[in-house]
Length: 175
Length: 331
Length: 134
Image 1 (cartoon, each protein chain N blue to C red):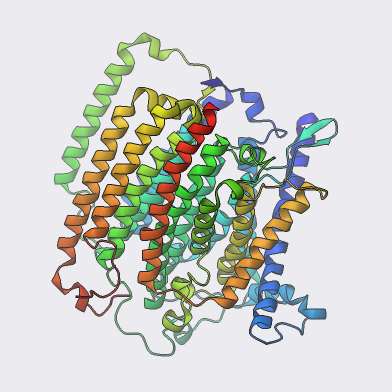
Image 2: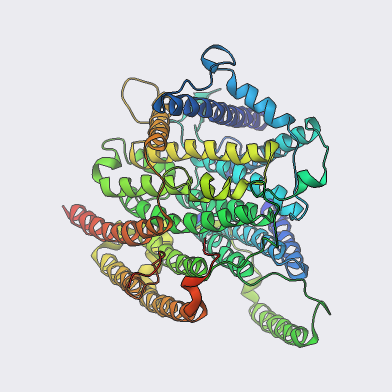
């Protein structure tokens, strides 16, 4: 076992542990923090696998933007302790179903291809190489992504406007 | 043996860097109080030592021995975590700042930077986006209305200006062709980027000041509306860590301004480290000066400046710079 | 893809991951040391009055867990969308020279769509914060 393999398992353990903590927390803000920790682990994993650019984006976008949005959302809907069962059956069943499906698909993918078992030499893709590859091979996908983001922006604005309602300007607690 | 020697050199490097960072941070506080006092026709600290030079030490002792209060309704874990997040992210940013060219030591070349990541610029950007948590969580965990309002304002302000900050650095990346801070400094051995990119420079400095939450962007801690904003409930060294984070952040901003636009450690006659420190010092002085002269913005003005001026201008700047680089590249 | 050498990765003479990890450990240890020192040196005499939330001398009423106003949430969504677009712009910027004019045209279109989104939100009033002026 090389040192990189050891690091891989250590980081993987961190991710699993942090995600498990995130799922089982009752306090939503604590859950968000553990999820941020889990994204940190994922970023380290990306770096270890030779994708420093993706590692940085993982932290900037997932930990820095999406989780901040989650935090805002949690603070927007009033926090209250949820009574009752920790895992309601209605949520547990689809979760188990998805897990089983994922396991089946990944075992078929990994097991079906014997070449997938041979370890590759450690390598790293520089950000410039990534940029060249992205814009030379997948530039159309990038343009479509821009359209998608435009739609997301418009949709978010229209939905948010509806939430805001007519009484927004008269609210007293506007900071 | 060789490995151990390397480890010791590395540890000394880290110790000198962090020691310098903390020392300069404490004396920046002194300098700021002194200069602000002068700008407001007061004397400033002048009791502890000559010119009040021992004031930072007195402050540190006072902060360390004060009682640390955790309000009854606060979320203890997050309340204790938030100041540490602010201080740690600010200090971590310095890891990628190159202090000078490699030096020779024990027949080996020792790089004058803690780590030269090929995504260094994004590393800084990622850390500054994590700094938002310190403010938002600190305000939320206190369970105080002032603190919460300060935290909300701070988080929204920081994420808005982070966009402008990031976009203003795109032309720098284009000119240097790399995210590595060392490569960016190397690319400015001839002409510093401030000459090529004055618009980017202006956007960067304005949004960096907004990120640091100082006057005229200090709405998260506007004292006449919100007490002390997001750190209203903090006392003792936990407040001290917020404070330390702020003054380390000023140095980081100075260093980043120097690295991205002012040519980093490049400069004639003086040794490279001195040049870098001089540039950091000048940026810090200007920030203190601005604090002494400008009034605070209104919240809608703040958001309008970020979203309606800085972001569109930086986008247009990117397009123009891109075309310019393509033209220059063919000649 | 450039191959990486595990030895160079872990050498303290290289400005790589090892030095960053060590720096991070030292920074966190320093912060913990400061917090521990202040806990050890500081006094502890809590009482009800002291632990009450500070509201400039007025006894606080109700909870402080008030709801975030929606505009702040909108800012977070806009930020997220523009941040993702920023990631694409950054990945183009670092390779802008090898990509040439073709890459410039592609990102030009991308930024054009981005600006169109910004203009839409702007015209619709999504960036307005002050009270409405009719």
